[in-house]
Image 1: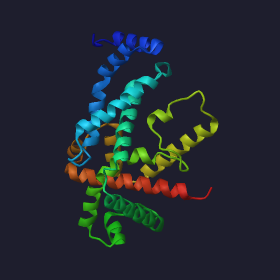
Image 2 (image 1 turned 180 degrees about the horizontal axis):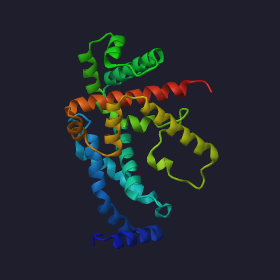
Image 3 (image 1 turned 45 degrees about the vertical axis):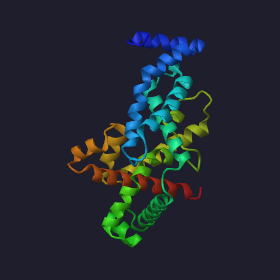
Image 4 (image 1 turned 90 degrees about the vertical axis):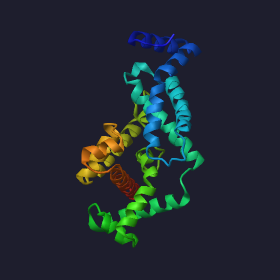
Length: 258
């Protein structure tokens, strides 16, 4: 029987956490399956059309199952928030494993990041697109073309860059309270968040708006375009540039001697 009410959902969680029963687990999977489609559709929006969204859904289901198995309702966090992070992580892990991004695109992304890092160190501010293009000895149109090509890399960047001193990437699930967490881990997580906030605050207003609407308000690129009065393609370029800036800034901090 499908879960229809909050009380039925709470009862299914209680039974599953107590007995680990297959029936209750399957009920929870069916109930939360729309989360997988939601995450897959958001990720698919930034991928080439050759990537089948149904494949992303399949990858995401493994993340959902893992989230249901590991989630602890007693911590007081919403399952949806925890699950979305796990689902997204499972999809991105699989995409990385099959290495769907051409090597030339990865190379271009690294070149743009290096140019941003160099210019910011020299200018002590965020470089403009024209300055980045001049540094790379290309035209502004060519730079915009590169942004478009590497936009699919940008969608995973916030997951990849949440690291401290070369540690593994952090997801929302990694930042949940843990009784075994020591003071050093807590300090590193707080400092990582501070570095991220400082990097975002140094961006221009449009880039901050795009990141806020995309990652915190869960708007699509098309919806953000309507808010800003620009095309979806332009929003994609702004998002890509913003994420590359974050990557380059946090990487440069990471390389600084202690």
